[in-house]
Image (cartoon, rainbow, N blue to C red; front, side):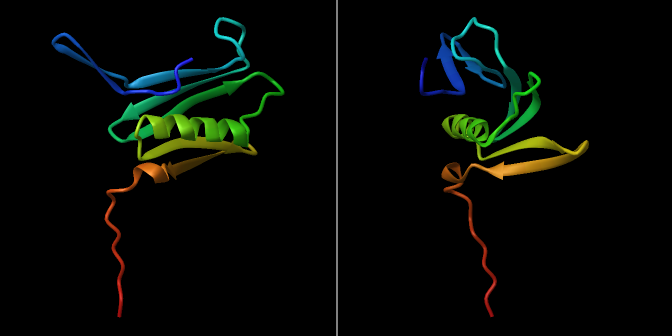
Length: 110
C-alpha cells in the first residue's frame, strides 16, 4: 500500500479533490473487515462521521493514532469525532499539531 497521500490530483484540465475517505480495518484488502469509518474533509478540517466495529472490536488508542497519522498526511489542521461513553455522545476536536505551524499565538502580558 502507498504510504503518502495527496488531497489534490491534476489530470488534464481537471483537479480532483478528495472530500470523503472510507477506512477499513483489515489485514488484507478484499478480506472481511472488522471496522469501518468514514472521514469527511472540509478545508483544513476533518470529521469522522461514521465509525462502526464488530462486537468485541473496540476503537483503541492504536486506531486513534493511525487516524491521526492519516489526517497529518492529508495536511489537515483539526479532526473532530463523537465519542460515545455510557450512551452519551461527547464531541471531541483534536489539533493535528504538526500542521499548525502558521497559526499565530497571542499572549496577553501585563
